[in-house]
Image (cartoon, rainbow, N blue to C red; front, side, top):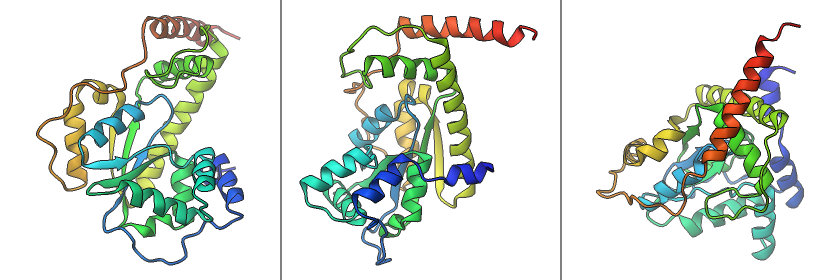
Length: 259
């Protein structure tokens, strides 16, 4: 299977959402409903996307930017409000959040392609991409390994267990994130959308610049003040650093072992 064929393969959320609505997922009107571009926050797990989303929403220039394309969320919200199609679901989420802001959603590569295949973007005046990635893939993989064990996905959530070091687990996530970064960069280069990419550390250390650049991308002025305090905090601590250092030592030994 070629690189592009693999990229376009429907992922679990697309498959399950199609099942939820019995295939009623295509926007067929072709009519623009919202006189603004859709914000696409392209991300991978443990990349700082929640912190970036909180910063952007706090600026009062953006809204939404949640994981509203996960099949369990789609199913729960649609059942609660008796929504019968995916276009109706997406329209309702946008209308509920948009106000005087630019509405957006977090999405993976597969979820972005899903929106395009189902013509959901034609509800908006195009789309623009805010991509966030983490340059240190080892730290990202360690963070993912710890989060999956503790079930703590943000600084607000208490840990349910003490994580243990697992070389194979970290190596698996390292490979996944390296592949995901490549696919996101390739997709951005192939699409005709305006896009901007930020690194995780910039979101943590220089949020004013990040928010200002996002506002510039959408043609609006940045707020005079950006709150210093956020609800979410950087999760990584001493344990993350310990696991990362141990993984790097072991990985170097394995890479340099002959045979």
